[in-house]
Image 1 (cartoon, helix red, strand yellow):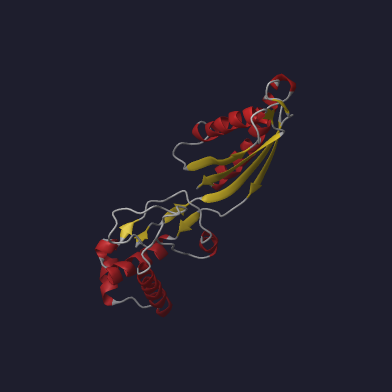
Image 2: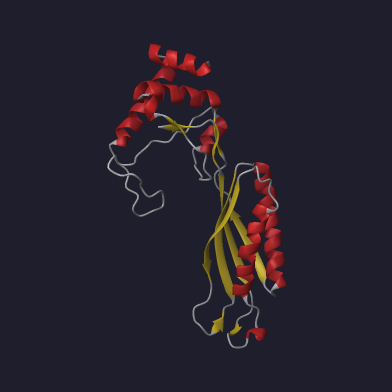
Length: 233
């Protein structure tokens, strides 16, 4: 099992653009407004909003993950669709960058004689683990699984809906190791070859039950008490 207090995952917003130009014959580009050129320029420009208009000590990711436009080799299309995601730990920067994305998208599209429609589907807020809750769960894991089976989790820019719980109550979201013992590495999430060792689910259930039981009964086993004292030292 792996734990970390504070920021663990990022906010996750879905981004959608429609770049609209004027279709034309590919052999006569001057008679149209090419949305593919505008979209290409916009994709490259958007990265400067992260690299040059964000505090480099504040995590932030802007990724364009899909581009669809055109159907044949000899026609400049009327429009291009872009899709992407914005990830951040900082809610203030999140709002600022969304405003800039819309304004800069319009400006870049206009530069190429096109228009831009930008829409945001707001997703999860950042996942922030409570320090005390994380400490309690981590110590429970050390007692149940042993110190060697408990690690410190490196925060990621993933998104997680558990963040809504953490906004309301002191909470801890932890990671459960599921790599099969006979493999040195395993493909990550969103990979068709991701195949977790399902025997790990038993460990996960046991850890969840132990943490919940100790918390609800307001009792800490003697061994866990010792772990807590050592951690405080």
